[in-house]
Amino acid sequence: MTVTQEPLLVKLGFRFGINGPHAARTMMLDDLRALLSHTPADAIRADYARAIVDDNVLGKSTKSARQLAWRHLGTLYGCGTNNPIFRALRRLWPLDEAAQPMLALAAALARDPLLRGTQSFIVNQVPGTQVTREQTEAFLDRRHPQRFTPASLKSFAQNVAGTWTAAGLLTGHRRKLRSLPARRPESLALLLFLAYLEGRTGQRLFTSDWTSLMGGSPDELEALANSASHRGLLVFMNAGGVKEVRFPGYLTPEEERIREEASRVH
Image 1 (cartoon, one colour):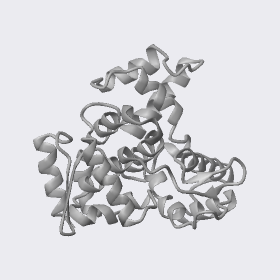
Image 2: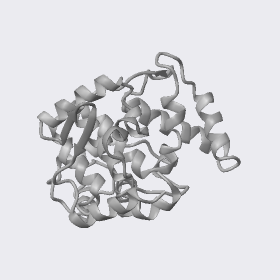
Image 3: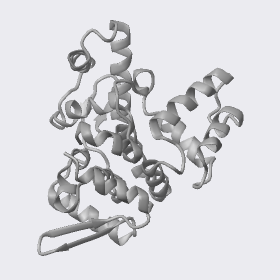
Image 4: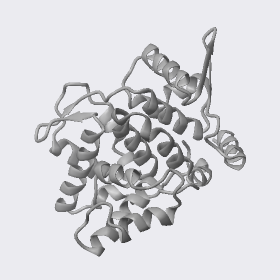
């Protein structure tokens, strides 16, 4: 994505800037699971706020804790039917529990610039190698010089590591090792959709930063795309090596127009 694309991508559900929930939280996977299990797929933003703050579906002990949880979840996932990324998440979420960690990670990366800034650091680690908190803190400190106190930097690093662990790209409690996540058709469908929102089509969908999260070979990704197509998650065609991916019903006509405009901006 480019800076000039950003205003258009914001209309499609992305967030940019220098702040994000990972300064204070992980991607809150368990809370997201609880929230989505207690709300209908067509819930509007106010319904999610009510479920957390008034109905306390997350089981928080105080009203201030409930309000804080809503602020972070609402920011991190853009809960509501007017957000194409969240709509896609909700569409895919109930289909395969094993895909949920990667679905949550994908949406969180699209909406939290702080988390997104750590993606290259994690993805570029060789599977099986150790990723220490000190390495993570040093990376974050270089990326955000003099922005965080040592205590805040430690907390930020722990939150980031917690999210990457929950998503399956790190394993271990104290000793974190780079690992490969579960490769599920539902996960790939959302990752391809995010690349599509950024203006990619065809083969370029399979070579984006989004699909690099899966860690699979081109043949493995194509097999997953075929599975996703057979399950009706998207339409995938590959004729003579020319790939086409479509997402029927994912975008409104106006959102599709914005996406097409974003694809022409460099």
